[in-house]
Amino acid sequence: MPKIYRKVYKGMKTELTTCDRCMDEKWAHSTEWDGVTIACPDHYTGQYEEAPFSECRLCGAIDQESRDEYEEWAADMDRMQWEEQQEAEWQRMEYM
Image 1 (spheres, one colour):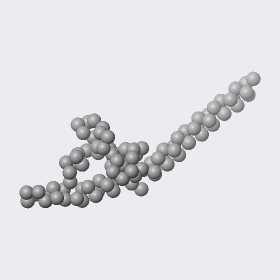
Image 2: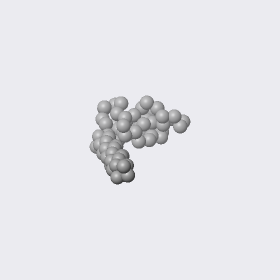
Image 3: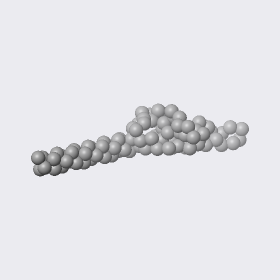
Image 4: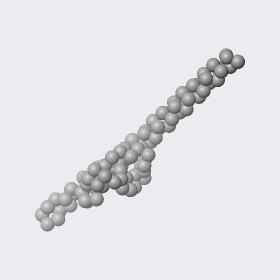
């Protein structure tokens, strides 16, 4: 499963989102320029943060594992809230 990352520039989140596979491909690319090997384009260097609900702008990959984990967590929270409401209703009915 690919992990999706968002570039952060000077503390601001940018729209550049890329998956770990595309990022590895860009970093693996090296170019000779005036006798100097450049590891990757400048716009790929810098700080990145994980952005699990975004889509890779290069290949369109998504982090389905993170999305599934979130959906499970949300379903658990809904179930817990429903159970608490049912328990509160039963307690109210007992006192009537």
